[in-house]
Amino acid sequence: MRSEDRSALDALERRLSEESGPDAAAFARARRALAERAAAAGLVDVAFERHETPLGALVLGATAEGLVRVGLPNEPEEAVLEELAARVSPRVLRAPRPSLARVRRELDEYFGGRRRRFEVPLDWRLTEGFRREVLFATARIPFGRTASYAEVAASAGRPRAFRAAGSALAANPLPIVVPCHRVLPGDGGVGRYRGGAEAKARLLALERA
Amino acid sequence: MTARATGRPPRLPPFEQVVERHGPALLRFCAAQVGPERAEDCFQDAMLAALRAYGELRDPGSVRAWLFAIAARKAIDAHRERARGAEPTEDVEQVAIAAPEAPSDGALWAHVRGLPDKQRRALSLRYLGDLTHREIGDAMGTSEAAARRNVFEALARLRREVGVG
Image 1 (cartoon, rainbow over the protein chains, first blue to last red):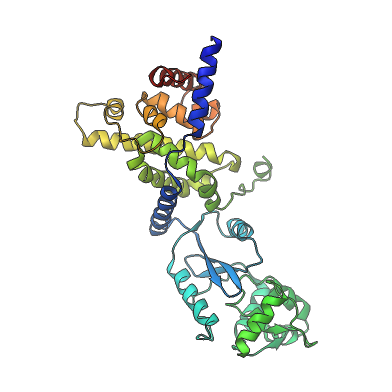
Image 2: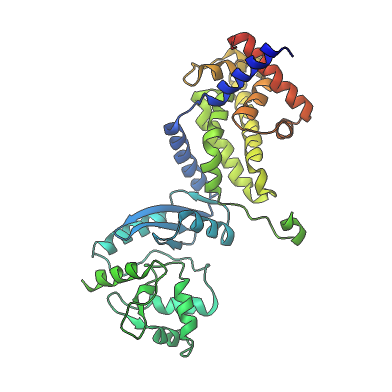
């Protein structure tokens, strides 16, 4: 090939790589339509949405059975989605789902002081065994009340397993909705929280108001 | 490789990540194949087919080539559908050439849509899909050498028509 031909082709290659075609708005539109069609066709195993709250943005994931994961503001969205892909199904997509609309409404009411318990259906598959029992016990602690790790362990059937109860709460896949922030150490402090001690203190303050 | 060795299924990233990383280029690819007006439908059809088959993808590293191969097939389907709706004597290739869309995207890509079918597809897979010649061959059911020739002939023809250089 002659050298002027080569450089002409190089120029053409550059232009082909640079000219953009459909813009970001077209992509956003196509993506939304895709999410709706995928959800309607039952192809989305985990639908997720981001939801703004006074604590920050939560990542909410739901299967066909119900809410399966609440990602707190200090958890990177990508990590939450990768966890869902690995443990539930890789068919994870930002898509609408009735249970997501419902939990968003309930969260708004909760943070607005108009709701004391969550009624959205839950999918417990990310927790099992004693840990699941601990979370069941935690879900029964009423709004505005607190319990100790030992009390929750006892209520889950193993009164002496308060350390194991602590790890179960630290790994709660459904924080806020399953109120692990209501479980406190005996020393008078707020103790640890998956979303950070400050977030825990704010939730407790909200419930005292 | 390790996944196959241990018999475990491969660890696939969340599909959302596939849409995020490869979606914009896939939409441009669709526009180059079927025109900007029908690009969004082609994109959705391809992504839906990919989502449906996602669990069967054995090598997460090849997700981009796999996705563009699906889109190339969907674009051919779209042409066939359109051909059925048009004059019954026209063949697919002629319909694609005879019905240029009003170019609302880059002027050069409007010329690309006038290329013969195989050249257009190969060129688009190369520059919008960023696929290797081997991957283009796999996507189009040709050899690597034929893929390379299709891309080269497309470039040469464009150069004659557009007069770049």
